[in-house]
Length: 133
Image (tube, rainbow, N blue to C red; front, top):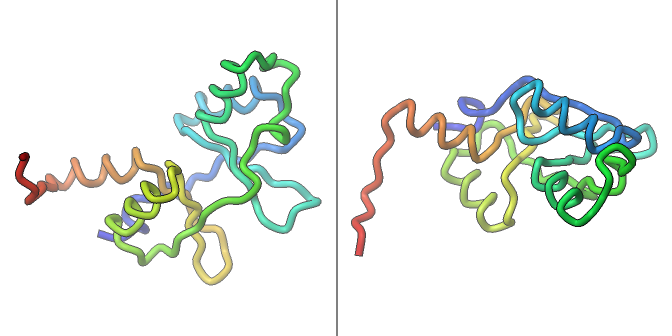
């Protein structure tokens, strides 16, 4: 199966001036673990994830004062929609990330999360040929 079959085409966007509470509320409302951050001063989107918000608050930041700009990733990792889900999962594990931005011919077309991959694999009844030790 390919990335295009698992990705979400609904993309949540926030601005760098939103507070962490704003970002968390929007992620909760949309049922997603990440939001893309669009900034007129940056040519490419960036990303803030639930992990970023959790780390900030756990580190003592006030979610009503701390800004997305101070806690978002500096860059996003992208994948084309024709990658296999296995390749996407391998890249995510290798890089220690849980979200890939899906780009086709220079256009943002979706976001793929580890949760999306698991959903697709369990929906189609994927099994593993790996035997436990």
